[in-house]
Length: 328
Image (cartoon, rainbow, N blue to C red; front, side):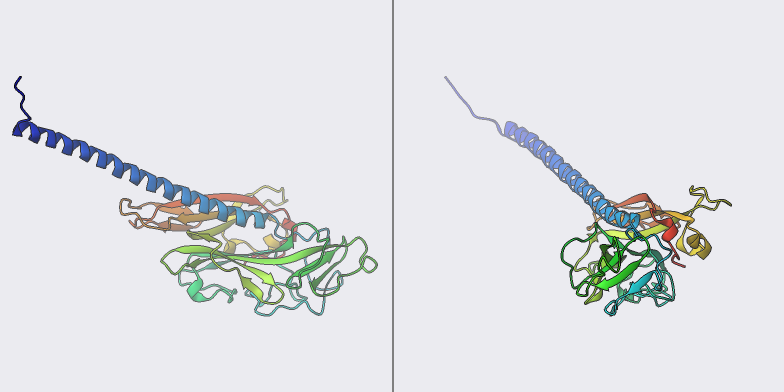
C-alpha cells in the first residue's frame, strides 16, 4: 500500500489556520486581561471610597458629643474647667487662633470646615503646610468625646473630660481625675480633635490624611495615608431656614454661605459629603472626558487615563444645638 505525506500546499494551509487560531487565542487573552485590569480598578476605587466615606461620616455623626453634659456651648467658666496640665503645644489653630481645647474667649466648634482656594490658601490650619494642601477641597475639623466612658487606666498621652449633667472638667491623662465627691455621678471620656484633609502623595496622586490630638505631640499627623486615591473632598451643609425651625432641610450651602446665626440657632442639621476617588494608575486604554460635580465644585477628567468614582453621603448631625459656630 502506497502512503504519502502532506503536500506543501496543505502545510501552508495548516500554518495559516494555526496562525488565525493563535491570533484568536491571543485576542481573547488580551481582552480578558484588559477586563481584569478594569475590574480591579473599579474594585479599588469602590473600596477606597467606601473606607474614606465611612471614616469621615462616622466621625461627623458624633461631632459635638459631650457625654452626659447638658450645659450650653463649651466655654471655660463655671460649668467647664480645665486642669493646669490641659495645654497643647504644636496645636492646629483655626482662623480665630483657637486650638483643640476649650477656651474662655469662644465656644468650642465641634464641627468646622475650611475651604482651600484655587491658589492653595485658607483661613487657619497653619498646621497643614502649603505643599501638603490640595486646591479646591475642604478641611474638616471635628471635636468630640470618644467611645464609651473610660473605666480603666488613663493614657498619659491623651486628654480626658469628666462630665455629669451640670459640670465638665478637662484634664490630661497623667493628672488626677475629679472624684465622685467633687463631681457626683461623673463619667470620664477621651476628648479628641480630629482634622481630615487631602494631600499630594509625592507620586502625582492624592491621599486622605488625619491629624489627632495628643498630650505630648499636640496635633499629631497619623503616619502614612489614611486612604489612597481621594482626589477631592467637598462638604455642603443642610440648613433649616424656616421662620419657625421644623427640623427639615430647606437648602444645602457651602461653608462660606452658612451664617453665624444659623450655626448659633442650631439650624445646621446635616452635612452632605462628596468624595471623588481616582485610580492609583492611569490606563493607556482609557480616556476620561467626564466632568464630576461635587456640590459647588466641578472636576474635569481633561482626557487623562485615570478612572474616577464620585461618592456622596448625607449625615444628620446628632448634636446640632451644640454647633456653636461654623467655618466662617
